[in-house]
Length: 399
Length: 228
Ligand SMILES: Nc1ncnc2c1ncn2[C@@H]1O[C@H](COP(=O)(O)OP(=O)(O)OP(=O)(O)O)[C@@H](O)[C@H]1O
Ligand SMILES: [Mg+2]
Image (tube, rainbow over the protein chains, first blue to last red):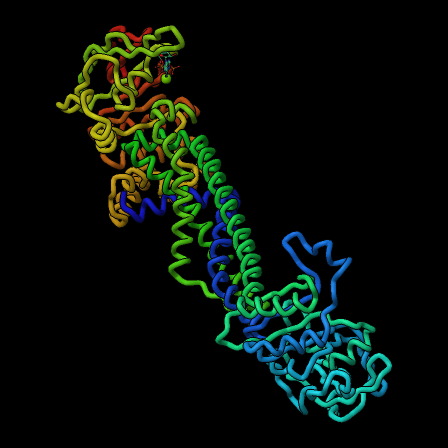
């Protein structure tokens, strides 16, 4: 049998049962699709997440009140947690490796100007925030470095807030009302985009002490530290801990280094990758079982044909090859459809999240197709062996 | 050309031995036309299966064209089936998804004949059997007689020396049965040895020689000339 005739014969057999073949190939397609999607996005996803979380700068450490353990927040939190204060932040700045600190208070509130009003996120921050978080100022300037007690009522607007309240008219220098108090607009930010669904442009920045008064708080929600590039985040975190424990009497706060955050995210990504991989694996398994089932049915239905082929001088080994070939063709079609699904899926992902780089390498695509073929081969072995083992006389009698 | 000696074929059905063939001796010259007849279960198909190398005897020897084929291995027997033997079945055994053309071409495809040679040989065969205008039809679009003609075209496309037909007219009405018999006889005239199993005495009478089987044995030979 010429190779092209062998191929034609198997493809014709598969094509003769269009619906059945389609359904069988679908299992393989989903499996291969998941594998391709995974390999296409895998690397890009890591880079994307890293970029997302370092866009506010690297070498950051954040301190939050309350001790977070692996079991959540310890009971000590309720009784004797000392709040984080601006004074804590000021003292921490004395650690040599720490370049700057930001004392953060955050809440929601209305901001109004003229007739217009908008509810946005209000951040109470220090002048240092622009540098620590790498803010880009579009117009004017960021908050001045006033002493906390004598902070002036200035506000810097996120790009969206500025657009909504002022449109194309001049915002700088105008007064806006936030929670009943008047603030003078001294700056407007460049658009920052979104971070995991939070619209960073839909927010305004006022001095920390003003925000504390506004939200009626006497403590901070977070302190952010920027440490020098050369210093190790763990050793800085150790020093921070020592200083704060000395001040608070116990470890009633949590320190999160950026590395740790990325580690946790890496873990989440790992789980996600594992889940998609598992779906792919299970689909391939189900697809393989599907091929095995369909090929077994085909051998039953075509017993007479097998007898005929034997009568025409086809050897057992060739019968085996023919049915293995059919299983492989089924799986290969599923594999190709899976490549389409995977490439299309990753393209769609990169369309929805432009920053997410998707790249399908040809070697991975070829490997995925090979995987499909191997699944087909394995699934085809049993039915094909059964077909080859049939006695020609018995087989001819079947029809 | 064909020489069977002391052929025995025993099937085990549960604990019981069923003697399908008992000490069968038979010889056939090249170009002969033999009808194998006998009651149901007498071993006609079993004999034809041995002749067609689809089954092996439990004992005895089978010589075909001077070769002791009963001793050949599976591969060599397959090659003989491919090149020397053409089968025609009661139920046609056409491949349902293939056109008449592709069904006839199948033996050529399996033996690795190139497409352009296939084209000419199959077209010629279809024309010879009056099937040229049915080349693209699938078996389910053909009548019983047409199907059997396709099957005969397929059985003879490799120019075998023997045609083995097991009740080739058993599934056809009278007129298409006669038509099919005439085609087979024409092939016999051209020199192919024709061995045909049939229940039908009318069909049997057409042959030059009848072999009667009873309970696995050949009972005696009846020589008849056509028209006698
Ligand atoms: N595979 C088998 N297993 C068991 N017994 C078998 C087998 N094949 C044939 N036989 C038995 O061998 C005997 C001869 O069978 P065979 O098919 O050759 O008869 P036949 O003359 O062709 O009958 P019919 O005219 O009905 O086709 C029968 O008794 C049958 O039951
Ligand atoms: Mg029979």
